[in-house]
Amino acid sequence: MAVAVSVAAVTAWLVTRQQLMQQLDSNLRSVQASPGYVQQLLRTCGIEQPEPDQTTDTPTPYTVQVVTVDGTVCAAPGSTPIEVVDSDIAVAQGMRDDTLHDAKSEDGQAMRVATSRPDLPPGLGGAYAVSIAQPMSGVSDPLNSLALLLLGVAGLGVIGAATAGLGIARAGLRPVERLTSTVEHIARTEDLSVRIPADGDDEIARLSRSFNAMAEALASSRDRQQQLIADAGHELRTPLTSLRTNIELLIRSEQSGRQLPPSARSDLLTSIGAQIGELASLIKDLQELSRPDGVPGSLAFQPVGLHEVAERALERAKRRGTELRFASELDPWYVLSDPAALERAVVNLLDNAVKFSPAGGTVSLRLAGGRLSVRDQGPGVPPDELPHVFDRFWRSPAARSLPGSGLGLAIVAQTVHRSGGTVTLRPAEDRGTEAVVRIPGAPSPPPSSPSPGGRSG
Image (cartoon, rainbow, N blue to C red; front, side, top):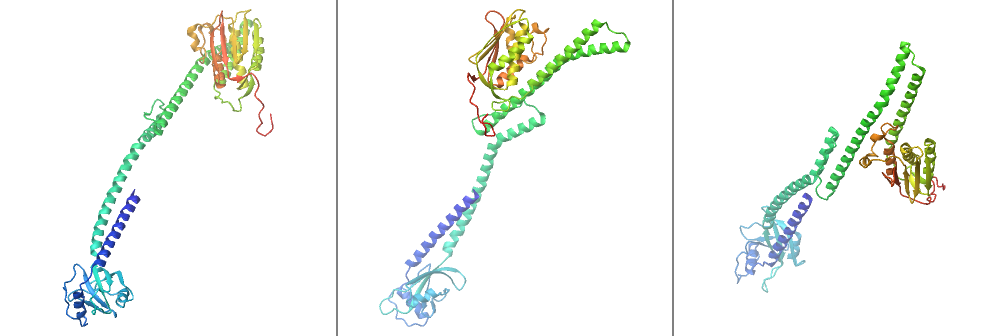
């Protein structure tokens, strides 16, 4: 702004100066000294002239002098002569018609001079020229006043622009300052409940909304982490307490020398083994849940036949449910997922069906049109418990006595969601429970794509 105002002020000053100089030159060229006055000036130089027939008044406010061919100046008595330059003499000698230039008087005053040959009556002509001058103060004084005015206006303009710019910048950056303060507050206090007001549709408002969404996601993640730790601690406490009690009983028996009956000792060791297996299973489930979410295209994700995964999971389930019947109907369906995690999810669904099916019951596994269903003939899940079946560590009151960690269905939900699908649990038509999994895919395998090395896989 300072540069723009300065350029405008200098331009205005130069244009004004040019206009004033043009006006001054035009005035000087238009003024003509009377023949009588020229004759009077020539007499001051000793040049004989007849008596003039016209007025001899001095043209004001101009200074008039006559310049001869040898550079002699003929000026009125009491006036201050003006310095003569070569162009003035050239006009006196008839080599030029006129000239216009700057000069100084003998007292040092700046003058603007117009020199031309006089227009005298016949018989009075001669080898000399007439110079008409006017002080440059008529131009310099207004220009100096204009310069002071422009300097003041430009200074006020720059100060006003700087003040306005500072105010606008502060107003525009105020949301950024609030965002910065909020970030610093969260970094200092780890309080993720703080939110930034996000009004409007500008970039700052979008940034504020994005930050609020990020803070909310972080708060939710931390809450889930804390809940997972609390639930895991609660679930680990029971087998650890039982395991510690059994081991302490064995230690006291050894230290006191009072041997336990063989049957009691065998039952105690069997219980310790079962509790260790329960702990190992729980830790394995926790590790599965702690895995970061994958995305299609990552190294863990690859095209896999869901029907093949379901068939392998069914073979594993058959070894556990020897008193049950199994029915399967698997149409080809290919999805993009983690094969190991997907097989574990299907195994968990089948394990649940085996666990709750009565002896002699049937577990059905169907895959058609990308819809995988696992159905049992057990007692079913009460409607008020269905919203919680995929929560971590949640177990139905009727299943508290059965083995399990309460993480199986949570692992199923996480795996299916990472594969871009959905999973639901609902009552079957006649009796039992049906789990339905839908994962986007196709009935035929995708064409093989080139490997990173350039060879087809």
